[in-house]
Amino acid sequence: MTKPENTPRQNFHRFFDRWLGELNSNLQQLASAANHHEYDGHEDDEDLRMLINNSIGHYEKYYKVKSEAAKEDVISMFSPKWLTSLEDAFLWIAGWRPTTAIHLLYSKSGMLETRL
Image 1 (cartoon, rainbow, N blue to C red):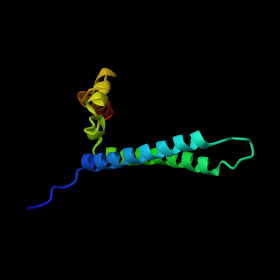
Image 2: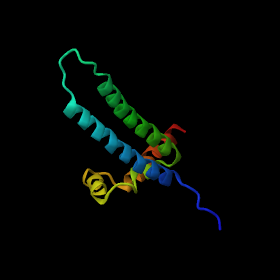
Image 3: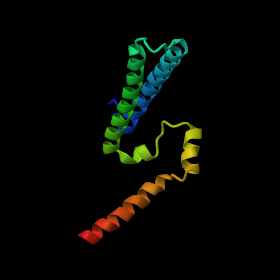
Image 4: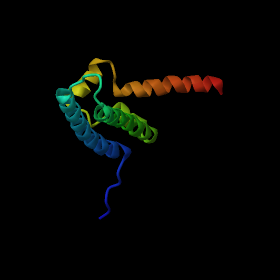
């Protein structure tokens, strides 16, 4: 029996699960450091800067991986299966529908057709 092939959607879903775990850890570290940090104007803030830079880098990694996944399967980025039901509902309330991608592609193809 052959092993099912990993799709970009599945790969991103696994990445996102790990990413959320790391995000939670980063936020706990930041909160702990902020609660125990006493600033007197002379103290070395290198540890805080490192935690902040790690958090920023964590978000940069998310958008880089998401961008790469979108290049492979853009539709899955517009109808993500890794969202919770509540997050999915917010997408719909905000006006996003999976068919919006089809309408967008259709309108862009019309513009391309006129140029040809």
